[in-house]
Length: 179
Image (cartoon, rainbow, N blue to C red):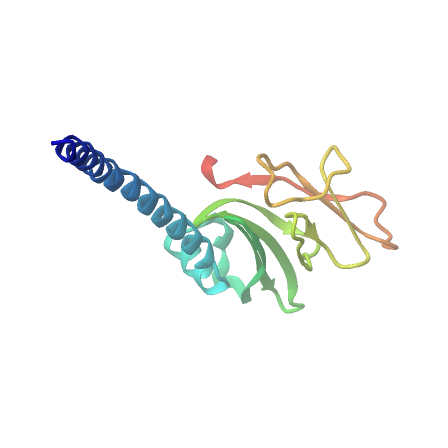
């Protein structure tokens, strides 16, 4: 007779575990699936993908593109869900270059800097955007460097060291959400 109450208690505990476990497993699986999907979205942001993305959305970055000789896209780096892509346009008989920097969050364009002076050389492990030697870069109104993980973006200022220009070329951040 002592065996029956213990068996009933053990059975009740096992039954309770079966009821609780599926919800926990489902939450864990769902969370892992969302994480994997978000990582997959960031991984799909390649130069080729960005070109299709901009064309299908009739982006202002492509305005007057039939007059361009060359249009190229460059991958500069990714940190977490943020990806930095460059867009190069070349115009006219003298092949004047125009560079734009695009920041993506997953597979959505956050915004861009249009007609910057120089492309970066990459993205550091902490998200700071590195530029080639000889190009001084800071965010407008501060000495801070561009970081693709920043919650808010401001104008980007650049100057070539040793150049005759006495002032920085500053371009505004164009939020894609405001367009």
